Each structure stands twice: as C-alpha cells, then as structure tokens.
Length: 112
Image (cartoon, rainbow, N blue to C red):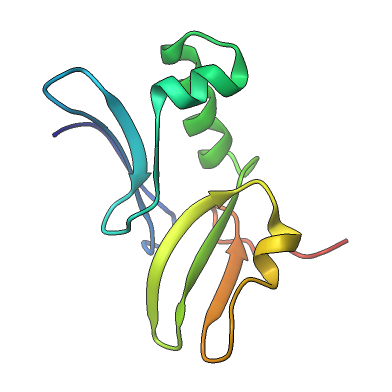
C-alpha cells in the first residue's frame, strides 16, 4: 500500500493514514491498529463522491468534529477507531480493559 496522507496528533500518540492499494482502493485508519474504513464505504454513507467523502472524514477528524476511541488494557492500546456512538463505547470495556474517548487534539470527551 502507498501512503497518500499521514497525520500525527498534536500529542504524538496517534498516526492516521490514508493509503491506496495497487487496485486503487483507498483505506483510512490508525497506523498500527486493526480498525479502518474505505473510501467506498464513506461515499455510500455520506452520499458524496469518494474523494469528497474521504476529505470530509479526514477534515472532521483533524478538526475535532469526530471522536476517537482508544481501547486496550492498562499500559497498552490495542485498537483505535473513530466512533459514532461514544456513549455505547464508553461502557464497552470489560474487567481489565480500558477505553479513552478523546478528540484528535487530545482533548477528552466529556459527557454533557
């Protein structure tokens, strides 16, 4: 896969990549973690052409309009994803697991 974009969060904890495979499939996700999405999925969900859907997704993430979930165990993050349901994700971990809900800027999500 060729990396088209690489973004590092201000605190250096997250690296977000936009990549393209040899067949032209665009994927977006956090470097080193399993969660990812694809341009065709974003386009289908938003009703926008793929390039615009990708740009909106990335811009929303980088401008703190999207919420990021970091899941793992104490001292180790095992997955990172953009969440659309933070209240559900906040109660996702089971005993011994942790979840941090935050924005790209590292500002924590606070239930209002």
